[in-house]
Image 1 (tube, rainbow, N blue to C red):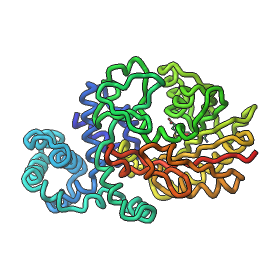
Image 2 (image 1 turned 135 degrees about the vertical axis):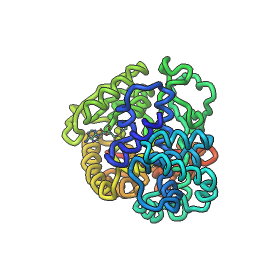
Image 3 (image 1 turned 60 degrees about the horizontal axis):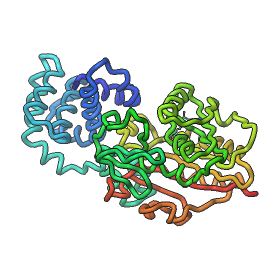
Image 4 (image 1 turned 180 degrees about the vertical axis):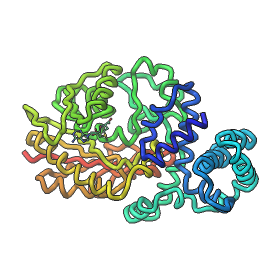
Amino acid sequence: MRQGAAALIEAVLERRRPLEEALDALPAMEARDRAAAHRIASAVLRRLGSIDAVLEPLLRREPPDIARAAMRIGVAELLVLGTPAHAAVSAAVALVPQPLRGLVNAVLRRVAAEGAEAIEALDGERLDTPGWLWGSWHAAYGPAVRAIARAHRLPAPLDLSLLPGAAVPEGGVLLPTGTVRLPAGTRFTDLAGAGEARFWAQDAAAALPARLLAARAGERVADIGAAPGGKTAQLASAGARVTSVEKDARRAERLQANLARLGLEAEIAVTDATAWRPAEPFDAILLDAPCSATGTMRRHPDVPFLKRPTDVASLVALQRPLIQAAAAALRPGGRLVFATCSLQPEEGEGQVGFAASLGLRPDPVTPDELPGLAEALTPEGHVRTRPDLWAEHGGLDGFFVARFRKPE
Ligand SMILES: C[S@@+](CC[C@H](N)C(=O)[O-])C[C@H]1O[C@@H](n2cnc3c(N)ncnc32)[C@H](O)[C@@H]1O
């Protein structure tokens, strides 16, 4: 299982491979072991800066990669996950060949003895956040950057969206916006009823864009950038006639399977939305644009290792033709909701002016549309969620949502 964790960490850090993809590529193992490997790898990635800073004074020279990997896992287990010291140390030692065992054992014994105090004394929020993200969030959100970084240290709860009339699964808490929340560590597949297909996993923030589009039964609605289908499911379960536009054929298959599991229907157009020419215009469009995904770091601790500052600029450029395509496909008077799961303002607030330059009019969100979440409403009537908001409920992903209308 710890071999699995080491493989996951190596895939993300050395090969910039998404954690979920690396998880799928692990050799066959018990579901429980796979989940444990994921949990350990996630803890290492979330706290990598702090972990390396704890190790730094204990190492006289740069250790071989395999020893560093084992020590990182050992420190995460000792100081983040609370694994008993003898188990954490011996398991990490077993990850390395004989000549390195003495080193790993000696270093981790010291971490077990002195590490808790050492990690406490560090500026972990800063160390565990890449400098470019810290700078960007500080510029955008001021001192809240610390609370954002703190929120990224903890695994996210499991959030569910429910089909209309579905019962709240045992242990779930109904949040004011309609999402059902279960404690972090709950596995979707373990939920009684998961097989009955009455709900799907979707962060409370990710559920807001479709909620704010407020699709009505019978309306023609397009969901652009639709896979794996959380938002299509919301729109279809509201009774809208949905066309889901998705460029990636493999992801479109997942979307299809997810809808089938829920007994929902949508027309799926596997195409690049910028080249898509629908026969008829739509009453409403949800554009969940591809983005840097920095708002999802609680759930995806690999994001900061996969993205570079230059990616944000490329994504901003990629989002614009999608906004244009969405505007063109709307009927006069139709509604557009633009959303990104990013904390980078360039991919959110920064795109509002572009939408306006296409003739789209802002359609501000009102406080009654965001029950219990007024703190996420901006003065302009956009929605800006951050992982440090809603702390009393356990936070939510970082999203930007803006609503527009095409003039009559
Ligand atoms: C943020 S994800 C969408 C998540 C989805 N809306 C949900 O709620 O489950 C963005 C999606 O846009 C798709 N995409 C990216 N560029 C696209 C394009 N030019 N046309 C259509 N889909 C695109 C990606 O393949 C990806 O599946």
